[in-house]
Image (cartoon, rainbow, N blue to C red):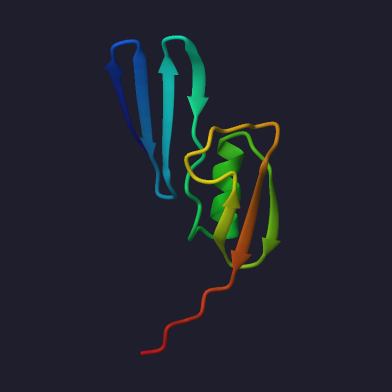
Length: 96
């Protein structure tokens, strides 16, 4: 995992890059630490659940395959108490 931290006055920005997604955490000033929910579209159910476990969240899965829709949406503040809902669909194999 690559991490980068930069100070912008009273605001600290921390970006963590993994194979699955990017995490962005903002902290500082008058606000407490706030993290935003990653875009999980295209991830397998297994990878999405791993990512949510790292964030300290649980999920309700609907369907099978890869994530096609999620709540909360990407960029929304993370609320670990409410969890996430993921909708999955099987991907069609492209035939040349």
